Length: 294
Image (cartoon, rainbow, N blue to C red):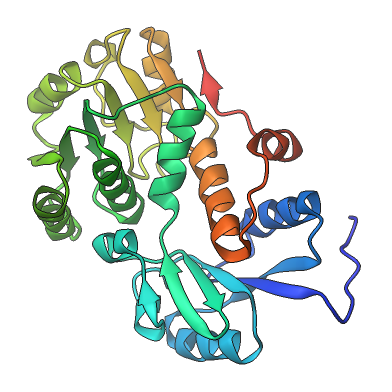
């Protein structure tokens, strides 16, 4: 493994989460720094919720350029920051902390990454209706950003579990703070799901159904839910093609997995922290990312 030559000038960007050793994020960020010719390294730190406040104090004291934030810290790190972006406030989550000379600003780039990946693949939901399934952190970020960017109408489906109240709150935020009209439905009503999908430009799975430990599973009963001109996307990037995406592709739909979202949220975070944007085509080639199925 080729390693960055560390000097007295080398700066540091962190990743704070627990567990974290499985993450692809440091490899993605370090590849970007190399391409940009920056004397910066990205390191993963195992930090859980109980240690987060001290870790953020350490970030400021040691003058890290910033840090990426993942679970379980995304919904609590705002308490230790000086400011958060409007999107992060609406989502109730932060995944990027920027250190501006000791003034810490929190951002959320998950939704931006998703919307950028759509654009990168020639998909334009602006001014159109979309249907999105999910009520967790990734789903909320996608839903909020889509509404902020100009999606006209959104049908949100979720199961009535511990995240149901979060889904209701997301719908209220979208309806009161954006120009998008959002409606929440129970995912148990599959007839309604089929009806809303049939009336949408884009359908997105923003749940964990399809990845381990639910790999090979989908809540879509059969191919009749998909029409050939419906665009179908998934926030999951491993496996490369979920059972739902395979079903949609076989029904003739244009499909896209979550690798693009993963890449573009990282590119956005890098630009926020360092003020420089890395070429996405280079990053796709460097990381072996291919997320499009025709």
